[in-house]
Image (cartoon, rainbow, N blue to C red; front, side, top):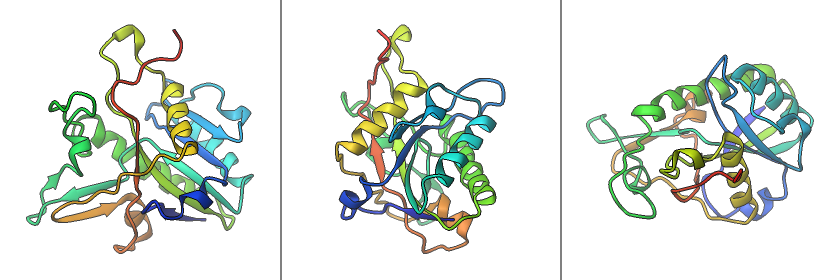
Length: 213
């Protein structure tokens, strides 16, 4: 098994014909905080799961869809640093609300971003340990961190995953992180290859609402 970050928009037409799993990753042992949406549809992902059960289901899905799949993971898959080595945002999408342009920090290294970056490292590492067959996983980062302010109308984990899948299938272009300094990727850390590409980012516009109403 190998990870292949989707680093630009040039080859997406080919990749969109592959099986795809969009994931809103959670990191809980007791709560069902992992949601996913697959194309083609898969019965394993009809409801949210806790972390360990979700990892098992993802391994089964990847193994039966070789030789290549697309994995969209809603968690930071890269980190940016200034020339002095300090962590910095990867772009305005982490600084500002996409609809109001007001300051609304969702940096990869603070608040939930930091814990989900760790979750992404463990999740990808665990996939590599469990999946032994030769299969290519094309990796895209999902970004859906600012939801509606209406408490009763916030999207579920399944809502977020379905929105990411829909935008991928519809051909939305990816954001490519550009920073003054350096950037490292989760897949590069796991492979030990500092030249490993950085996954492009599939962004859900801020203010996503629940589909349950």
